[in-house]
Image 1 (cartoon, rainbow, N blue to C red):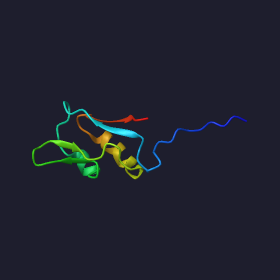
Image 2 (tube, rainbow, N blue to C red):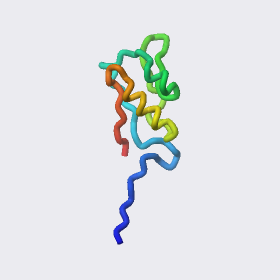
Image 3 (cartoon, rainbow, N blue to C red):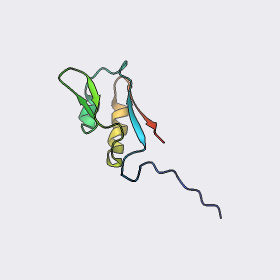
Length: 82
């Protein structure tokens, strides 16, 4: 019998093994993502978007996917960070 191990999608510390990446040339800093995942995204008084946690906890996975889907400019992606 051959056992196949699935790669873990999160590290031992509960962090996702993906990296949140924002294309700031495309980002309009409209704060849609911040409204969905304020633990990860923040639009500050200077009008710019900041990524607060590039490797967020596993518990935020579904909300991160929603933020990616909801971004009006498509500026947010999640990339494998193995």
